[in-house]
Structures are given as structure tokens and as C-alpha cells.
Amino acid sequence: MLKRHINLLYRPNLGKLEILVFTRRFRCRALNPHLEFLRSRRTVRAFEDRGVPLELVLKALEAATWAPSAHNSQPWRFVVLGKGGVRGRLVEAMSSRFMEDLLRDGVPEAEAKLMVESSAERLLRAPLLVLFCLVKSDLEEYPDERRRWAELVMGIQSVASAVENFLLALHALGLAGCWRCAPLFCPDVVKEVLSLPSDYEPQAIVEVGYPAEKPQMPSRRPLSEVLRLVDV
View 1 (tube, rainbow, N blue to C red):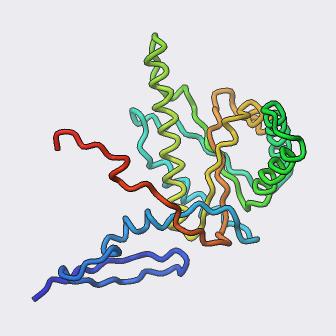
View 2 (view 1 turned 180 degrees about the horizontal axis):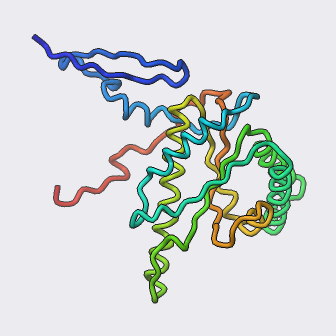
View 3 (view 1 turned 60 degrees about the vertical axis):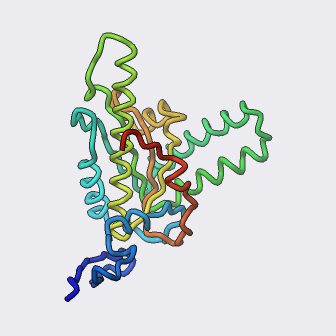
């Protein structure tokens, strides 16, 4: 008698659990729902025109706090932005800096204007924005530059891990997000407009909402191109 393997696969778009039953002889990719879940997450840039319950975003942020971090330092801080005047001022200030950078790079003014407007529109239309910051005071201190730099990178990696957890949690809750790194190019602007504490270092903004599109699976390099095995 063949042993049955029963898996529960959560379908975010349907909001229900689907029971998958497989025999050992007839395995398929969906046998491991956790790996399939990772593969099914997508970056979404178009959202439905409806609000996002704050409690769902807080659940996703709770998941973000369970990400791995250097020395368990947990150097992340989160700022949730609704659709209000503060967001408008932030986008306006960031857009101004973006325009300056593009013109300095030699981008024609008309083309630069279109790029800035497109970026600003997305930031303004997203139902919610979540800013991820790094707090360097949570990290270890070293007397030499080499180890200080390594510690900083570890802190940045820690915040990035929290962002990934957040995106996966959004997906599990039927939401979606788009990870944007614009704050890295104007951290002073972000800190000033939002009146952030001096030790907050803006790292990323995630646009959050209910997906209004189903992006195709993007191409990925085969594992053989990015893998090196040593003594295994």
C-alpha cells in the first residue's frame, strides 16, 4: 500500500486552504507548498483602489521582526505612511532630488520629468507605504575601519532580511508589495520630512496594497550558473 502525503496549500487569492494529497510514487512540484509559496511571490506595481487594513500590515511587520539579524541586533525600524499631507510632502521632496540627480547625469529635461512623474505617481497611489530604516546604534562598535564597515554591511543585510520577510508575509495575507530603494539616494530628505530620529538611516520603501495585476514569473538564472560546490 502506497503511503499518502497530505499537504495544506494556502491560496492567498482565494483565502482558503487547499488539501493536496499525493502518493510517494506520484510526486509533483506542489508537494512542498512552502517552496511553491516562495516561487509564487511577485513584485506588484499596480494596486486596487481600496484601503489596506492596518492590522494586516502590522501582522506582516510582526513577521518582519522575526528575520535573522547580525548578533540578533534587530537594527530595523519601521514607519507606516498613509495617504495624507506628509506623504505628499515626502514625495515632492524626493522627486525634487531625483530631478536634480537626473539633470546632473545629463538626462534631457523632458525625459527626466517623465521619469520623475512616473515614480512619484506610484508612490502617491499606493494605498500604504512602509519605510524601513537601519539604526546603527544597535550594532557592535569597533575601533578599526575594516570591522566598522563589516558591521555596517551586516546591519544593512539584517534590514534587507526584514524587508523580505515583510514581502512574504504580505503575500501570505493576500496583499502585495514593491520594494523600492529610493530612500538610499536621498536619506537626508526622508529624515527631514518625516522628522525621524537622528540615528534612523532610511533604507527602503515598500509600496503596499491589494494586487491589481498578476505579473508573469520573471526569468531566473539556472542554479548551475550561480553555484560553486567545494568539497561536497
